[in-house]
Image (cartoon, rainbow, N blue to C red; front, side):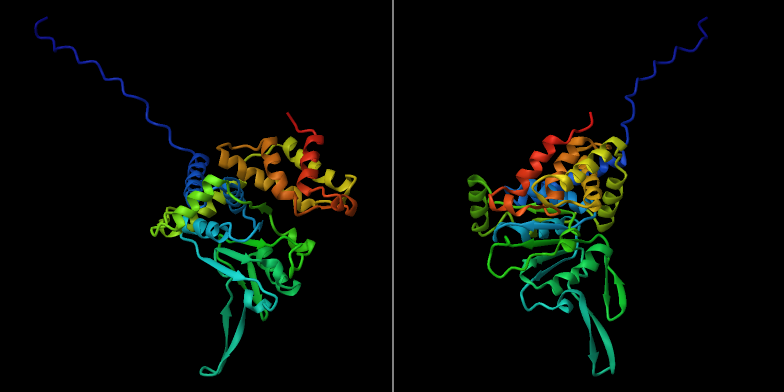
Length: 337
């Protein structure tokens, strides 16, 4: 008995290995980091930041309406800085030509040949500033770019490098010297986002930071922490977020309700229902879910539909706003449970 070996010590109980993050969790974490980074330099506009980010991840374009000097360019610059994207800005004016947007060919006298000069649309984030100050012919130069992510110059078709988003600003149409965007082009924008003045505290912080000499709100302080490929991966994951048939049917009912409502001169088309579901998926991913809920559809409804519908003249004259009409519509269309 004395020759028996001593008993082996008990095996330590090791904690279970941490579960690896799913692609959805990784995507949500990156979205939150982008949102926090942009929100740190664009103060007082959390809803605008969220809606622009959601549109970007949904692969769409944004029409941003608001007064000058509210940080629209700053917002796009900050978003581009997070992934090292290429940013371009076009100031739309009444004398801007389509070739100034897309590019054109020039004859090189030295080489005795035509050379292609690419326009500013060849980038990742395009800011089309005051788009409704240019005539319809120039506005239409963006149609192919926004719909097909390509440009045709003198019969030569050139694809754009993804990701690509157009963020167009427009002045309120009652201002002098504006050309209303045609319905066909308005429908190309995934969302219309309205930006308003920040509250007093945020406005004081913006003024203090911008006049401090160091300017802590400058986008120069943002170091890229993602790549264009990461953004494309985010877009692919957002497209895979689940949406059950009942929620899709709810989105379609909302869109169809805009067509038959009394007081509505123009209802949303099928592209509006598609946009509702795409944006709702991006909202769900931003929230950290892998499925769409009716609340995601409701969150997307105003920015997705407000530029796709038009009030009848009698309602418009009475002072009713499209957002008020759509809010009432959301209360009348039953959501799935």
